Length: 162
Image (cartoon, rainbow, N blue to C red; front, side, top):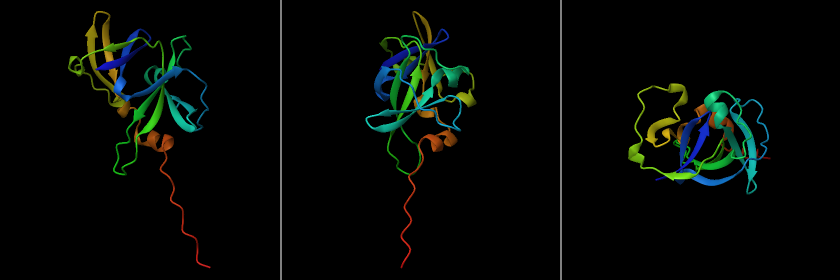
């Protein structure tokens, strides 16, 4: 498997390249009032609004730093619900994006710590540079945030008879 690697305060993290649609330079996002602090806002991609999560804010409680290597990564977010809703795009702001690196998925091992408030922190692997933690994009958003960022379309009311 191929992973996009990035760093947050010296710790390395990995995103599965199979979930990635595009990586681009960071751009300004429009704020979403009422959203959690780690929701950086919304950007437009191909004429469609895409919500953006600041991974440093989510993980560390601080906004991403504007490094030359800070990137906006568009990933496929699968809505796991019974509505059959299609996959959506989600933007992730990641700091210090590193080169893509191959790793075997089976090299990642479940950590022994319970992280109920950070279900998106997946298994870990080691290489010559130290440990890498796999980020599970599909576990990033709780139901309340999914409802805010990906609202269900409102069905139109039938016209009243005349």
